[in-house]
Length: 532
Ligand SMILES: *[C@@H]1O[C@H](CO)[C@@H](O)[C@H](O)[C@H]1NC(C)=O
Ligand SMILES: *[C@@H]1O[C@H](CO)[C@@H](O)[C@H](O)[C@H]1NC(C)=O
Image 1 (cartoon, rainbow, N blue to C red):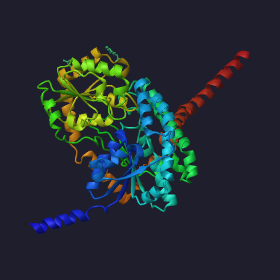
Image 2 (cartoon, protein in one colour):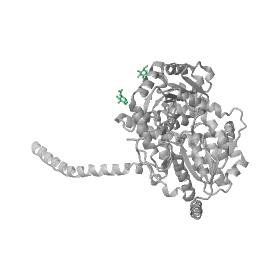
Image 3 (cartoon, rainbow, N blue to C red):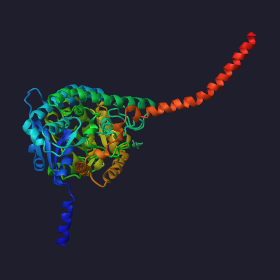
């Protein structure tokens, strides 16, 4: 028996990829883009690889986190400019999110404040020669689109430090991004695929399809323009590959694309083999709560608990919008349920009896608790997929970017209700929460879709880790979409369409031409007759 166990162990070890060195870069080390990469990193470490996270010095506390520091190495980059501040950057875009309208204009506004942070910080990374020579030993880089510096790191270490063929994996923590599918050469059909930030579902009217088609083109062109211009000087200054600062050239250097969605709730659409759906990265079986919190959960009796959170990027909502928070607290105080809230500074409010507020909550564990009946949140993609995993119905207040996309999915699948941030009132919030809690169809739908979501051969993080190892071994070139070899006109069959139209016209026109000749002959002869 020992012999056979030993043999199996041997086979198990021999079947694995040699230990690879993988760099992960999830937007400076803050928020959902970072937390979505951690489970992938954990799975890779468990399979014998070494994973290093690149983070900014403002989030260096990550490197001191007991769990993270046990699993990962950290590279922390510094910048000398006092005025350059990632914290400010995130606060700025949270403010735009809370004050402004939703959608694309919002993104353009954040671009103007984000550009300096993105480009200048990236240059700080590239200027750190000691760090760059350590990064030159990496086999693969996994990165998030909102901080594309990793692309330039690859270019730098390949051009200047003799690194060979570093594999690139682009991961997107957000709801499906049309631009990413176009980068991957994966089909994006605006007839039934809603573009990001449009608030459309897969079933669109004529007018919506027109907007959706135009919008997805414009969105990609603008992203391309921004990328090219923002990093133009960086590319020159560090002598980087000129094609790297473009989205349309990305197929030449990105091997694999990971998208944080799952077809349990996603509107169905086709994917190229180089795009893998890994929705629900941060969702996992719930761990036991602290005894004090567990007692609070149990004290809710049959009514159960509502969980409230505005996520990490928008945590400042709970301090800056005290007017809205007071309204939310007012509505919650009228509910028979108990409420667990994540509020950055709970001392700012006089909390109702039934509310427990904390600066940080273990969201996934709370959502997995049997007493939890509903989730009130900002419609962030990670929270959405955690609630889906645990089968919890939702009420959402979308704030920014992809929140509106997540909201559309929640509404059209019957998983919950929304409240517009411009239209919050205590009465309306109470009404929406009561509806979701009292009408059993939301809970039943959540449980049904949760069962579908969990019924997969590999969990999302392990699936992502599997494919990362796969492209480290084989590269992603064999999966590269042939769409990249076609022009816009060829891809959309515009040339064929025009040719067929021409042939059809000719097919009608030629016989018509003959008939026309005959007619004109007869009329000519007639007129001749008359004049005669
Ligand atoms: C705004 O709130 C009212 C209730 O206060 C609700 O009836 C109405 O549908 C809401 N409007 C929108 C656009 O959400
Ligand atoms: C419960 O919600 C579903 C889905 O929104 C709706 O179709 C149904 O009419 C509701 N039932 C009641 C009793 O309100």
